[in-house]
Length: 333
Image (cartoon, rainbow, N blue to C red):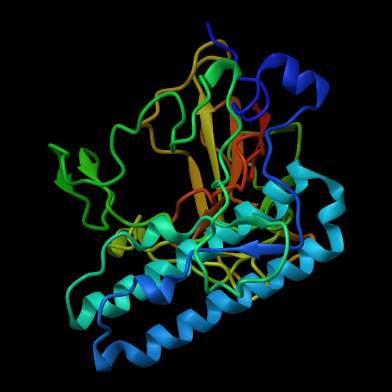
């Protein structure tokens, strides 16, 4: 058995000692020049492309300001709190540029490779010049074997459906399909969604109505594509202007046949509801879920979990963050 310490990027001694890989420190963020890598932009796409190029400049300026204010917190902070979130934002913008050009002309290739930025010792390239220093790498060592490529030490088996033997997914709730929808936007760690069941009964009677109280943080509950109408896994994850996930949350209760073996995954829960009420934000709030009762006696597992607009659990910045879900058990007599 292999235990991956931390987020799988560090060896056991590195994790225990708080050591980290090197990203360098400096005074400015250096990013590849996207405009110089673009093909001839069709006139019908020019306005949208220019808007997104300006957004790239704004993102770099914001990262520069944070580097100037907090760069003294060390290399790990720079990588996790500045460079990685910036790369995620740039990927979303590069995807929009690719889509804008693809609508009216030949699809540009390789723009996603321009997402990664780094710190340069002096000066500020404003997003214009290609970095000349060594690109930032994911720290190696430990159980994942290290390396500088995505999926370091493992090799990426697939990142699209081009070679899949399965049919394309069509937005409806069917298995044995391959989903080609881009993951979309992932927020900074401090903006990632979380939630908690704050109030629940320990015991209820059979068919007795009861309530759960659920508190969410960093989840704007304003986006829900109906899964039964083809809205399942078809939309990329989206952030609002404050960098918070737009979506909803789910609540389900199912009866457990056993408390020592996992339940059958295909069973339909006794209760399910999705909550998209227009509320939610950076500060915690509470929602009351009314459950009309559970028809069987035994042990019920009631769970809540966040969903983006297309029902996927929102992404987290790091592998060692706990996703937005919670579960409780309730005795039904």
